[in-house]
Length: 188
Ligand SMILES: [Zn+2]
Image (cartoon, rainbow, N blue to C red; front, side):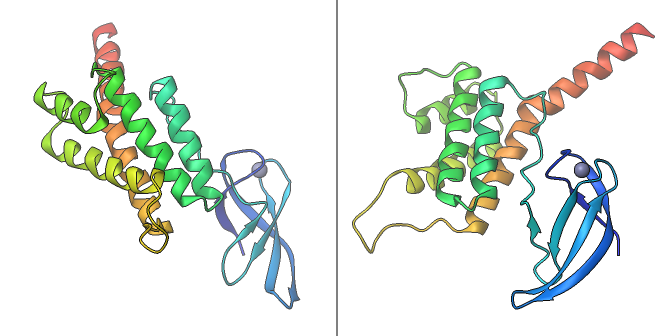
């Protein structure tokens, strides 16, 4: 069996070649050898869990540095099942984006997002996404009385990271691609 995964060693999408399987009380496993770096990854047949756990894919380098770092840290938290921390880092990334786009540092994030919208820097959709990330991030950052605390589960964190990704696509990646295209066209 061959399978395509993000290799935890060489950080590329690769095919694994099956180097044999075995059973344990924890289930069936097989050893997959990376076709690129030749290192061996252990794969659980049923859960598809892999050891070592693949780290998240690198963030698009076209995203500005401080934002990329927050985003990267959010993804690392996510891959370690630290969903609350992932949401807090995603909220931080949104705030860094607001500052990069000119929002007032003294304002609260809620106001900064509204400012971006009022300046036509983000659309209503983007504004709503940013508020969603902000609200979940707030829940994650601020503890409440025991029993009333909000739990952040895997799918919450997944949604938040996806919203952050889309936000970064629209504000950084797409404009940068358009810019590159323009340069190529002008140089022809
Ligand atoms: Zn590899």
